[in-house]
Image 1 (cartoon, rainbow, N blue to C red):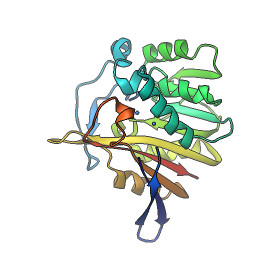
Image 2: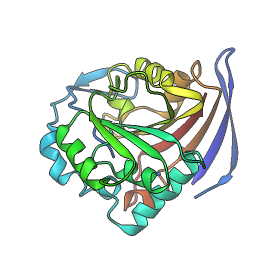
Image 3: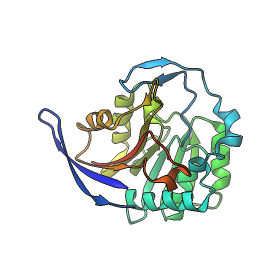
Image 4: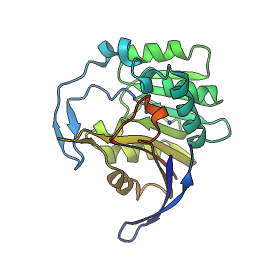
Length: 240
């Protein structure tokens, strides 16, 4: 896995990457999308997805259900590097059936998951029964957490599908405690009409919100996906 530490210059928004060697965590519910976001940030019409109906088969994808021990171990390893070493309050937005929430809870963290799909939430609750975790139905862009604040906001494959990613990032930033962090797993999918959010665009959006950023390139780690992938997949850990 490639890791880059990005130094941010707010003047002119210049990015300088310094590779720092190789180290050895993605699928979540995207909400009921009525549009999709192309790589240039424009929304195009897309058929709505009934995620309640998809809940029963959602975990069939290797990186959704994490049923394969090798895939599960790979995501657990990544999360261990992204989340604080001490027990922390983690907000998992677009949590789907709770696979990443489960890994975080197993590592000693207190988890709050939010998803638009009631059926996904029910499966997440069952998966984490007995754990220090609570799951709430709601919009990932404006999660129903009231005045609560968190050490980590964890979001996987959700930001690219939102109509206002900049607004969502700003709100998620406001949910963090001092010295908190955003952990964002994103990518670009497709070749003819690619959709997603490229790394450079996400870094630009994060510039005014965060103090330091680490980028990890995930495409080449076959263990995470249970297969080889050719598209851009990456994670950003952004501290405030």
